[in-house]
Length: 504
Image (cartoon, rainbow, N blue to C red; front, side, top):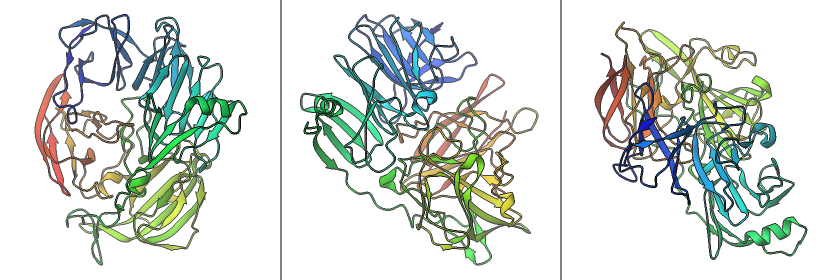
């Protein structure tokens, strides 16, 4: 395989792209790591690991070697790779977005993986470049804390917080010393190991942590904690323009975010509404907000609780019927929001709740592989709750893209549109490239996917895709239809929607 690595256009705005795949689609590079033998290893978005035998692959074409999860039964656990690190004795470690991490001691030919079977429904999301090695000590930074080994994974020590349950995953011992378990960045230096998390940063004396794990209760583990400045609440943002949502009692504002900014109120960009994560999973029916268990969940708008209990696969679930109605022509739709995978419910059926009110706590109950809130917004011609929450139905009949209902992040805008094939019909799961979203880094944005056959457009718009939280500016957006690129210039303005149509 011969590909050319395309350099970043701007470090903060333009992702590094590694040529194209076999059908001409761009390959997003998530991490670049040099090896002492002169190789360069690249982790990519959905395409596994690429290895160049030279240390300067950007200067010329390279005879790339590729490793993917489908190579063999004991190969990579997933092809979304954004952490690679090399040990002092030839060990190779990698970390994924959503399916744990792995180790090879034979130059990448075979792998020992830590995934759901050993990790459980936590520890699956490794932080960007979140594997750091010093001597024989390997530290894996994840959305559920740190996993530490000095024995190449024969034994682990978990380092987390005291808020949620002490889920140790593969670890023999758990130490609760972090103010927050959601780790976003990890580095090692002469003053200790610096851990960045949602509450700021913590400097660890890792040797002291290891001694404490061995039973030395007086061992010093935490060097210092520094709190992050509190960001403003997300509630009460820019009101929606008149065309987006109407009611018999006037024009409604956009709904609020269900997770506060300091708790990571950012949408997971790898498995967005309607997405299949590049063909990996079923088309998604909601938005995911990744944040630690126990995090408060807020009602996105005023309404009445119409469901509070177990739903699909036992997920603790809350459903709210909102006061706002959607009117399209002569049709009227009831609007519901549904909150899945909670660890605790803090409301009950019949309760009137208000925008921003805490209704539950984040968890991983039901069919979940990590701590997160799964949010759905339904626009239904009926107010029957059985049409909204049905424990036997994985594909509700009236879900719509939640990104069209909740307010974009301050200073950002929304892009929506259609993708039509040569036959005049919508193209399912087509990829829309060119939009740039720098956050969240731990679940990075690469492309949007048009909806599949089980996804439903907004009744007013009839869109095939929608992407919110896009920084303002001019973008060269494109799709690939029948092997040809179709480009459109998309101008994004804060607090507004930009519409775009792609067709031959």
